Length: 488
Figure 1 (cartoon, rainbow, N blue to C red):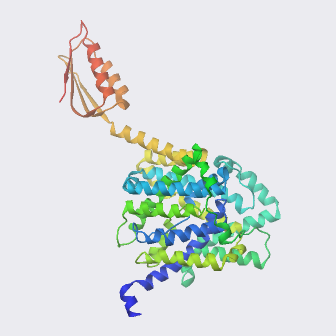
Figure 2 (cartoon, helix red, strand yellow):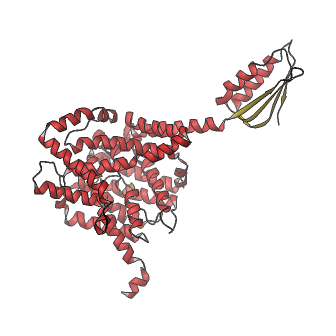
Figure 3 (cartoon, rainbow, N blue to C red):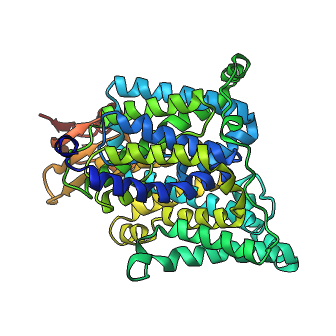
């Protein structure tokens, strides 16, 4: 015993933390799987792989991986469009792509992505997730598109309030959200119990005790749910849409994982994340998940922060949480059949709400409205179109904003009434500011000599250089004194 303590000096803290993370992970793994249109057990499989495979690899020491609410919408769309057998192929290909990106040392480049785009992506996912799970909470079928989900909510509310079973289902879902919000405020030992677990246990107990007519989780068994993709399933990779989904899985899962790593690093004083190695670890985990036909994984900030706050000191805590998930999935799968689906919908509604950065948006609006508009535009695009194209729109807007701000140019015109008109340009002259530059130059008197000083310009692109030369040639006509250009 003494030898083991010397070899693993933090074993007691890590075991305690692993149990906390396990209790947080169970309802989230099951809820994400059900919301994704996949068997509940597949969510547990992804959590197990996140602990036993990704957890053992180098990269980040304390963050925990598993199925994430942030990918729920994309996974559901993939399952709905291509079928559950194709999911394993998509996740496998995304994992291999992550491995390649890690090997090429691209992990650190994800840190350069616009935070407004990332937060907008999460906000858009949160909005679609909330809208879809409101239907599930009422026991109704949700429309396919994000806009249709939101526009259909008034009608769904009327349907839910009109039926006895739908009203009971909605009450269970709403009660789950209320318990999760209020539970963390409880004093003493009760408040230490994860709110999601407490809410699910209470919802399960109430629905069973009072025979509430609500749907429960369908249990297929761990071995029956794990369906590795067969050779025929790989034919979907010839579909351009599937390839786009693979890229979306890889990029979004990588970005969410590495941003989570940066956030977790701020919560503890232990070893910092090695981003390229963490990207390889995530890729290895997703590759194994794909081979098992399971859900994709990312690092999850909820589980990771719970791990740190519970006192974890080494990666042993996240590995052990995978062991507890494996034992639960192997020995107690029938327990899942008692869990009401509206309770899981309530958990995901709460998770979706936390994805929307309300305070961050207010702060951005006060200080950097351009960034706030990018955040909102990204979120709206994801709701209106889809996640992948919404993120691309956000990135494009971010690039345009950066280009516009970096192309600031200052024009000073000094006309003393006699002698040449002096024009000084400073800053960066790019095509984005060309209309402003030409408007100023073309408004100068045509019968006066002009001295155009470009020495204070940091950068002149080809479009501006050509336009300035052409203007100088036009202004220096037969009856007009020549333009004097001063450059570095």
